[in-house]
Image 1: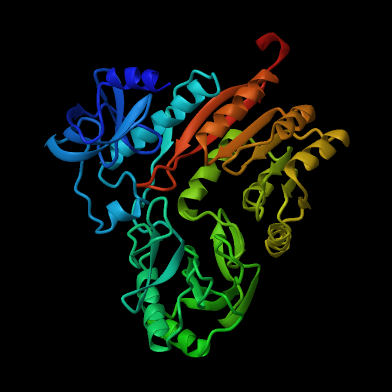
Image 2: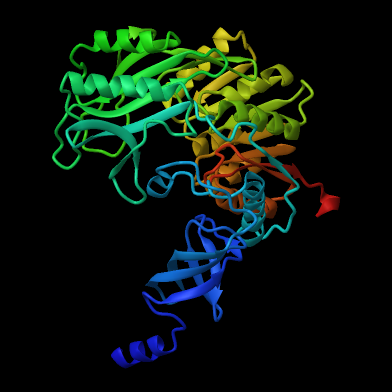
Length: 467
């Protein structure tokens, strides 16, 4: 075995710590630049297509290697200056050094490649919804809190670690958040409130959680703590409201568990309301810390507009909305459908959906608390024949049995909204085997400067003559 290993290494084109001249010809799904040395693939982060670099090899595997930029010899035309001081440490904005137009093309081609490689569906993605606001678009922020040199800091975990990189002023977050974070950190220091230490499971303040409703301007501030109450919380609320009068809700969320999950399941109101209100596609939405809601709600409206376009609603359709969350998609389309049935497994989300339907005067929508797989099977067994099924699954995609039950209900159209093109391509490949044709795929950029890309897919039931 040792001899074999020696022979393999002797033919390796590169070795660790060597420096090689490298042209970046592509970006992979992790945002790393791709180059080749004598046909051997090398991945280099923080590069752009067209960069000519000297790369130091830091890790060599059997099929590929990783390198870091030692020197840039020639700049890509897609490269721009980084304007964030913690960009390299944080790792959230993987594409911040690339022109936005090039970023959109990368994401569009990524969706195409997933459908071709994983789904076996050869298509061209003609449309990508660009983000009108590539800065300040996130309406929710979650900052872990830590102690640095005796002072409280908040920021983000560095890549593949739980080391907090201080950054209370992220450019992707709402500009309203940074001053409020500063108020909280000053309060923590002044009142000697210990940040949580996950190694020893000691301390009080774990995370800062902020939400803003773009349509109304209302802001929620929530401190995630190991106890139900924090000292002098009413004074903190006074300072927060003085900093920004749009703060309408100050809460404490208790999480005393040894877990990486940010939120516990109970919140107590310190000041103001337990919820804030937003409006999405004409639907009045209540938001608590536990509510699921699109982080980029303004761009999500355009995403849902496209989903409605693909649904081809005339007012006579029965629409089933699987993985419906708080019901926003179905409720926003209820005025153009005859009947809406939403399905969601999380009880609090179902209750949110039902209250939203009542509050918005929507009488043709009902919401079931059930697993999508069981609900789809039950509806199919009841003989329900919806005209349109909308699915908005988690990143892992749809369970195969969900897809099977959808096909048994035999809707004329399926509209899939996905935050993971890879699982969307896989699921669409399975649906095509069951007689559904992918009619169109559009990409959507909801999380600019990051690697994430969403897509919307229109599938139509084929007739016998089409097969």
